[in-house]
Structures are given as structure tokens and as C-alpha cells.
Length: 126
Image 1: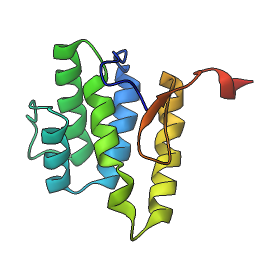
Image 2: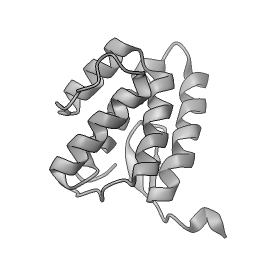
Image 3: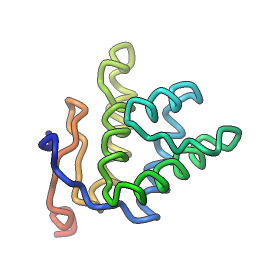
């Protein structure tokens, strides 16, 4: 798990889009509202838009304001809390794997406990 005050570098636009698309496929509209609120992302400006575009816009605005990727990382952890998947653990495993493919490029990994950890972004390239 990342230390509470660790500064996570901002995610690139491409990484944000991929994360938003993955979470958009995972969450309902009301779950997105809850995740954004719990992650303290208050720039939810595209309420009527496609779920992933709504997430992407909120992530970009908050990340730009914070100058870090902490808000996005927190949203990922909230959305991927394993407790949400107790009735369907195989769904958690699939979604976690898909997110980890994206997160690996940013040197991050989502553990089985639902917490993000730093990794070597190049270790899978060897």
C-alpha cells in the first residue's frame, strides 16, 4: 500500500483515458458519483456524458488542480475495493488484471487487497 502522504506523479492523458474507460465499464452512474465524492474529486462536470468521459473529465480537472495523480489513485482504490466483489471474486480478478495492465505503464499495481503499490514500470518489458 502507498504511504498516506506519498505524492503520485500525474498520469498521462493516455493513461487517464484508459483508466477512465476501464472504470466506466465497471461502475454504474451512481457508483461513479459515490467514488468521485469519496476520492474528493469535486469536478464532476459532465453528468450527462458517457461514464468513461465523465470520469476522464473529472480526473483531468482534479489532477491538474492537485498537480499529482493522488486523486486518480484514490478513485481506483475505492472503485476496486474487494468488498464490492465478495459475490463475484472472479470479476474482481478480471478487472484487477485489466487495470494492472494499464497501471504498469505508470509504475503502479493494484494488489489483491485493493491497494495500489509502486512497481518498476519496465520490469515486464524484459
